[in-house]
Image (tube, rainbow, N blue to C red; front, side, top):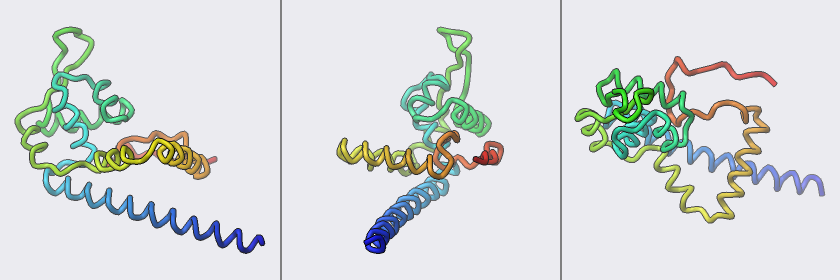
Length: 171
């Protein structure tokens, strides 16, 4: 009986690993298409799209729109400013807050860009039933716990800036 149960469990793991491989491969392909079309990383394009949708937004607004932590967004905004894709000026309403606005160079990049990997992922997640989404969420959170990465910052998809790489904590 234990052998039959183990075979069933192994079969389920094989299916799960295959699904992860297909998802990750497609996200990588889409990220590469984004980079080739625009010269921007998928993470940069996601932030640029959020700025385009809400001109004059703050880093906190972008973090909320992209479902990412503020520090990840701030680093990407800096790279976009350095590249001339967005500008940052003190807000007219609140001098403590900076307003981020897309430039004409940034607009040109968003026009020629394919959908980002995050947009593809969100579209797929949005098509799941609420029961499927809750089950997937519970499973993924459990998986991160079992892998010892549940407390690691999630960051943005395909934001591979070397300066952000941190060694994993040992358990």
